[in-house]
Amino acid sequence: MNFNERYNRIKNLALRELATIEENMVSQINIREPLKISLRKFLLAPAKRIRPLLAILYIKALGEELNQQQLEHLTVVEMVHNASLIHDDIIDESKIRRGKETINADFDNKLAVISGDYILALSMEKLSEVGNIELIKDFSQTIRQMCIGEINQNFDRFKIGSIEDYIEKTKNKTAHLFEIALTGCVRLSTNQHDLQEISELGLNIGIAFQIRDDLINMTNSDTSKPSNNDFEDGIYTAPIILGNKSDNYASGIEKTKVLLNNYLQSAKQQVTSLPDNEYKKALEEFLELLNNV
Image 1 (tube, helix red, strand yellow):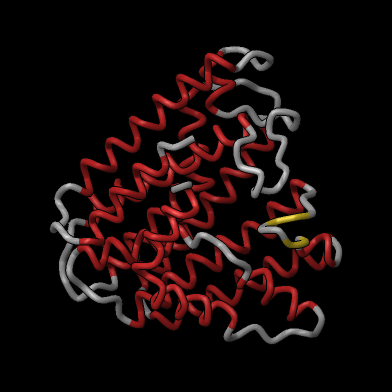
Image 2 (cartoon, rainbow, N blue to C red):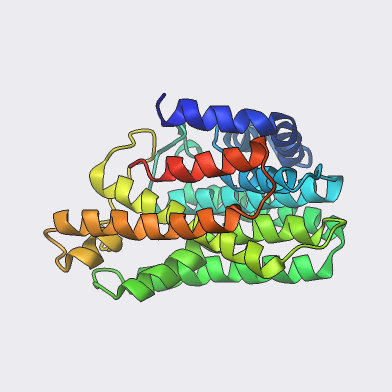
Protein backbone atom coordinates (compact mmCIF):
# COMPACT_ATOMS: atom_id res chain seq x y z
CA MET A 1 0.00 0.00 0.00
CA ASN A 2 1.13 3.54 -0.71
CA PHE A 3 1.12 6.42 1.80
CA ASN A 4 -2.44 7.56 1.09
CA GLU A 5 -3.88 4.05 1.29
CA ARG A 6 -2.20 3.36 4.62
CA TYR A 7 -3.13 6.77 5.95
CA ASN A 8 -6.78 6.41 4.97
CA ARG A 9 -6.91 3.06 6.77
CA ILE A 10 -5.78 4.86 9.93
CA LYS A 11 -8.21 7.71 9.28
CA ASN A 12 -11.13 5.28 9.05
CA LEU A 13 -10.93 4.83 12.84
CA ALA A 14 -12.03 8.45 13.34
CA LEU A 15 -14.42 9.14 10.45
CA ARG A 16 -17.40 9.89 12.70
CA GLU A 17 -15.52 12.45 14.79
CA LEU A 18 -13.85 14.02 11.74
CA ALA A 19 -17.23 14.38 10.00
CA THR A 20 -18.52 16.29 13.06
CA ILE A 21 -15.45 18.54 13.02
CA GLU A 22 -15.88 19.32 9.31
CA GLU A 23 -19.55 20.14 9.84
CA ASN A 24 -18.60 22.43 12.74
CA MET A 25 -15.96 24.19 10.63
CA VAL A 26 -18.49 25.62 8.17
CA SER A 27 -21.59 25.88 10.35
CA GLN A 28 -21.11 29.57 11.21
CA ILE A 29 -19.80 30.94 7.93
CA ASN A 30 -22.12 33.78 7.05
CA ILE A 31 -20.63 36.15 4.49
CA ARG A 32 -21.53 37.36 1.01
CA GLU A 33 -21.48 35.13 -2.01
CA PRO A 34 -19.45 34.04 -3.90
CA LEU A 35 -16.81 34.20 -1.14
CA LYS A 36 -18.99 32.06 1.14
CA ILE A 37 -19.03 29.23 -1.41
CA SER A 38 -15.26 29.47 -1.96
CA LEU A 39 -14.49 29.39 1.76
CA ARG A 40 -16.76 26.39 2.31
CA LYS A 41 -15.11 24.57 -0.61
CA PHE A 42 -11.67 25.41 0.75
CA LEU A 43 -12.45 24.21 4.26
CA LEU A 44 -14.20 21.05 3.10
CA ALA A 45 -11.77 20.09 0.33
CA PRO A 46 -10.34 16.58 0.83
CA ALA A 47 -7.62 16.93 3.47
CA LYS A 48 -5.65 14.68 5.81
CA ARG A 49 -6.93 16.35 9.05
CA ILE A 50 -3.76 15.11 10.73
CA ARG A 51 -3.90 17.28 13.85
CA PRO A 52 -7.43 16.36 14.95
CA LEU A 53 -6.92 12.76 13.85
CA LEU A 54 -3.91 12.28 16.12
CA ALA A 55 -5.75 13.77 19.08
CA ILE A 56 -8.81 11.58 18.43
CA LEU A 57 -6.67 8.44 18.23
CA TYR A 58 -4.82 9.38 21.42
CA ILE A 59 -7.97 10.02 23.46
CA LYS A 60 -9.60 6.84 22.16
CA ALA A 61 -6.43 4.88 22.88
CA LEU A 62 -6.89 5.97 26.50
CA GLY A 63 -10.28 4.25 26.43
CA GLU A 64 -12.29 7.47 26.28
CA GLU A 65 -14.85 8.81 23.82
CA LEU A 66 -14.52 12.44 22.78
CA ASN A 67 -17.02 14.83 24.32
CA GLN A 68 -18.59 17.83 22.59
CA GLN A 69 -16.07 20.28 24.07
CA GLN A 70 -13.15 18.25 22.74
CA LEU A 71 -14.69 18.10 19.27
CA GLU A 72 -15.24 21.88 19.32
CA HIS A 73 -11.62 22.33 20.40
CA LEU A 74 -10.38 20.19 17.51
CA THR A 75 -12.60 22.18 15.16
CA VAL A 76 -10.77 25.30 16.33
CA VAL A 77 -7.40 23.59 15.73
CA GLU A 78 -8.35 22.74 12.16
CA MET A 79 -9.79 26.22 11.49
CA VAL A 80 -6.64 27.92 12.76
CA HIS A 81 -4.56 25.60 10.57
CA ASN A 82 -6.67 26.40 7.51
CA ALA A 83 -6.56 30.13 8.18
CA SER A 84 -2.77 29.85 8.24
CA LEU A 85 -2.87 28.01 4.89
CA ILE A 86 -4.87 30.84 3.33
CA HIS A 87 -2.26 33.31 4.56
CA ASP A 88 0.60 31.03 3.44
CA ASP A 89 -0.83 30.85 -0.07
CA ILE A 90 -0.77 34.65 -0.24
CA ILE A 91 2.82 34.83 0.99
CA ASP A 92 3.96 32.05 -1.37
CA GLU A 93 1.82 33.32 -4.26
CA SER A 94 0.40 29.79 -4.61
CA LYS A 95 -2.48 29.31 -7.03
CA ILE A 96 -3.37 25.66 -6.29
CA ARG A 97 -3.91 23.79 -3.03
CA ARG A 98 -5.49 20.35 -2.62
CA GLY A 99 -6.10 20.32 -6.36
CA LYS A 100 -8.26 23.48 -6.21
CA GLU A 101 -7.64 27.17 -6.84
CA THR A 102 -6.56 29.04 -3.73
CA ILE A 103 -8.66 31.86 -2.27
CA ASN A 104 -6.13 34.43 -3.51
CA ALA A 105 -6.32 32.92 -7.00
CA ASP A 106 -10.13 32.93 -6.93
CA PHE A 107 -10.31 36.55 -5.76
CA ASP A 108 -7.29 38.64 -4.79
CA ASN A 109 -4.80 39.02 -1.95
CA LYS A 110 -6.90 41.60 -0.11
CA LEU A 111 -9.98 39.37 0.12
CA ALA A 112 -7.78 36.35 0.87
CA VAL A 113 -6.16 38.10 3.85
CA ILE A 114 -9.56 39.10 5.19
CA SER A 115 -10.86 35.55 4.60
CA GLY A 116 -8.05 34.09 6.70
CA ASP A 117 -8.73 36.64 9.42
CA TYR A 118 -12.45 35.83 9.26
CA ILE A 119 -11.78 32.12 9.81
CA LEU A 120 -9.53 33.00 12.76
CA ALA A 121 -12.28 35.19 14.22
CA LEU A 122 -14.83 32.37 13.92
CA SER A 123 -12.41 29.95 15.55
CA MET A 124 -11.95 32.28 18.51
CA GLU A 125 -15.71 32.55 18.92
CA LYS A 126 -15.92 28.77 19.04
CA LEU A 127 -13.06 28.61 21.53
CA SER A 128 -14.78 31.07 23.86
CA GLU A 129 -17.87 28.85 23.82
CA VAL A 130 -15.77 25.93 25.07
CA GLY A 131 -15.29 28.05 28.17
CA ASN A 132 -11.86 26.91 29.39
CA ILE A 133 -9.68 29.90 30.26
CA GLU A 134 -6.43 27.89 30.33
CA LEU A 135 -7.15 26.60 26.84
CA ILE A 136 -7.84 30.14 25.60
CA LYS A 137 -4.46 31.22 27.00
CA ASP A 138 -2.74 28.24 25.37
CA PHE A 139 -4.32 29.00 22.00
CA SER A 140 -3.36 32.66 22.18
CA GLN A 141 0.25 31.65 22.82
CA THR A 142 0.16 29.08 20.00
CA ILE A 143 -1.07 31.61 17.43
CA ARG A 144 1.50 34.13 18.68
CA GLN A 145 4.28 31.54 18.23
CA MET A 146 3.03 30.70 14.73
CA CYS A 147 3.30 34.39 13.79
CA ILE A 148 6.76 34.69 15.37
CA GLY A 149 7.93 31.67 13.40
CA GLU A 150 6.76 33.22 10.14
CA ILE A 151 8.28 36.62 11.00
CA ASN A 152 11.66 35.13 11.96
CA GLN A 153 11.69 33.00 8.81
CA ASN A 154 11.21 36.13 6.72
CA PHE A 155 14.06 37.99 8.42
CA ASP A 156 16.37 34.94 8.13
CA ARG A 157 15.93 34.43 4.39
CA PHE A 158 19.15 33.51 2.54
CA LYS A 159 20.91 32.78 5.84
CA ILE A 160 22.10 29.31 6.79
CA GLY A 161 21.36 29.24 10.51
CA SER A 162 22.00 26.55 13.11
CA ILE A 163 19.97 23.36 13.38
CA GLU A 164 18.83 24.60 16.80
CA ASP A 165 17.36 27.72 15.18
CA TYR A 166 15.63 25.51 12.61
CA ILE A 167 14.07 23.32 15.30
CA GLU A 168 12.88 26.40 17.21
CA LYS A 169 11.30 27.82 14.05
CA THR A 170 9.70 24.45 13.35
CA LYS A 171 8.20 24.36 16.84
CA ASN A 172 6.74 27.81 16.33
CA LYS A 173 5.39 27.41 12.80
CA THR A 174 4.14 23.84 13.03
CA ALA A 175 4.68 21.80 16.18
CA HIS A 176 2.86 23.98 18.72
CA LEU A 177 -0.41 23.46 16.84
CA PHE A 178 0.10 19.69 17.02
CA GLU A 179 0.88 20.10 20.71
CA ILE A 180 -2.28 22.05 21.53
CA ALA A 181 -4.46 19.57 19.59
CA LEU A 182 -3.38 16.93 22.13
CA THR A 183 -3.05 19.01 25.29
CA GLY A 184 -6.36 20.78 24.67
CA CYS A 185 -8.21 17.47 24.50
CA VAL A 186 -6.52 16.41 27.74
CA ARG A 187 -7.51 19.66 29.45
CA LEU A 188 -11.12 18.99 28.46
CA SER A 189 -11.07 15.35 29.54
CA THR A 190 -12.95 14.26 32.65
CA ASN A 191 -9.91 12.17 33.65
CA GLN A 192 -6.47 13.22 34.86
CA HIS A 193 -3.50 12.75 32.52
CA ASP A 194 0.16 13.80 32.41
CA LEU A 195 -0.05 17.10 30.50
CA GLN A 196 3.73 17.48 30.21
CA GLU A 197 4.21 14.06 28.63
CA ILE A 198 1.40 14.70 26.15
CA SER A 199 2.83 18.14 25.36
CA GLU A 200 6.19 16.57 24.49
CA LEU A 201 4.50 13.95 22.31
CA GLY A 202 2.68 16.65 20.35
CA LEU A 203 5.90 18.61 19.84
CA ASN A 204 7.86 15.55 18.73
CA ILE A 205 5.22 14.55 16.19
CA GLY A 206 4.85 18.13 14.94
CA ILE A 207 8.61 18.58 14.50
CA ALA A 208 8.88 15.22 12.74
CA PHE A 209 5.98 16.12 10.45
CA GLN A 210 7.65 19.38 9.40
CA ILE A 211 11.06 17.76 8.90
CA ARG A 212 9.40 15.22 6.62
CA ASP A 213 7.61 18.01 4.76
CA ASP A 214 10.92 19.83 4.26
CA LEU A 215 12.52 16.65 2.93
CA ILE A 216 9.65 16.24 0.48
CA ASN A 217 10.06 19.87 -0.56
CA MET A 218 13.73 19.29 -1.38
CA THR A 219 13.23 15.95 -3.15
CA ASN A 220 9.97 16.90 -4.94
CA SER A 221 8.48 13.53 -3.96
CA ASP A 222 4.92 14.76 -3.37
CA THR A 223 3.29 16.36 -6.39
CA SER A 224 -0.02 16.87 -4.54
CA LYS A 225 1.44 19.73 -2.53
CA PRO A 226 1.42 23.32 -3.82
CA SER A 227 4.53 24.51 -5.59
CA ASN A 228 6.75 25.89 -2.85
CA ASN A 229 10.29 26.71 -3.85
CA ASP A 230 11.73 27.26 -0.36
CA PHE A 231 15.30 27.03 -1.61
CA GLU A 232 14.81 29.66 -4.31
CA ASP A 233 13.02 31.87 -1.76
CA GLY A 234 16.01 31.71 0.58
CA ILE A 235 14.27 29.55 3.17
CA TYR A 236 16.97 27.08 4.17
CA THR A 237 15.65 24.01 5.93
CA ALA A 238 17.37 21.03 7.60
CA PRO A 239 18.85 19.44 4.40
CA ILE A 240 20.57 22.73 3.58
CA ILE A 241 21.73 23.39 7.14
CA LEU A 242 23.03 19.87 7.71
CA GLY A 243 24.64 19.80 4.26
CA ASN A 244 26.59 22.98 5.16
CA LYS A 245 26.15 24.36 1.65
CA SER A 246 23.21 26.12 0.08
CA ASP A 247 24.14 24.78 -3.37
CA ASN A 248 24.88 21.14 -2.47
CA TYR A 249 22.47 19.54 -0.05
CA ALA A 250 22.65 15.83 -1.03
CA SER A 251 24.58 14.88 2.12
CA GLY A 252 22.20 16.98 4.18
CA ILE A 253 19.22 14.92 3.03
CA GLU A 254 20.60 11.74 4.60
CA LYS A 255 21.45 13.56 7.83
CA THR A 256 17.95 15.03 7.87
CA LYS A 257 16.46 11.54 7.59
CA VAL A 258 18.42 10.60 10.73
CA LEU A 259 17.10 13.73 12.48
CA LEU A 260 13.55 12.81 11.46
CA ASN A 261 13.98 9.28 12.81
CA ASN A 262 15.26 10.62 16.15
CA TYR A 263 12.06 12.62 16.74
CA LEU A 264 9.90 9.71 15.61
CA GLN A 265 11.70 7.34 17.99
CA SER A 266 11.05 9.76 20.87
CA ALA A 267 7.37 9.90 19.93
CA LYS A 268 7.19 6.10 19.71
CA GLN A 269 8.58 5.80 23.23
CA GLN A 270 5.87 8.14 24.51
CA VAL A 271 3.15 6.11 22.78
CA THR A 272 4.28 2.81 24.31
CA SER A 273 2.66 3.63 27.67
CA LEU A 274 -0.82 3.70 26.10
CA PRO A 275 -3.13 0.69 26.57
CA ASP A 276 -2.83 -1.92 23.82
CA ASN A 277 -5.71 -1.40 21.39
CA GLU A 278 -6.38 -0.58 17.73
CA TYR A 279 -5.99 3.17 18.34
CA LYS A 280 -2.52 2.78 19.85
CA LYS A 281 -1.58 0.56 16.89
CA ALA A 282 -2.89 3.24 14.52
CA LEU A 283 -0.71 5.87 16.20
CA GLU A 284 2.31 3.60 15.92
CA GLU A 285 1.56 2.95 12.25
CA PHE A 286 1.23 6.69 11.62
CA LEU A 287 4.68 7.27 13.11
CA GLU A 288 6.08 4.53 10.88
CA LEU A 289 4.38 6.21 7.94
CA LEU A 290 6.15 9.50 8.64
CA ASN A 291 9.47 7.72 8.16
CA ASN A 292 8.56 7.02 4.53
CA VAL A 293 10.10 9.83 2.48
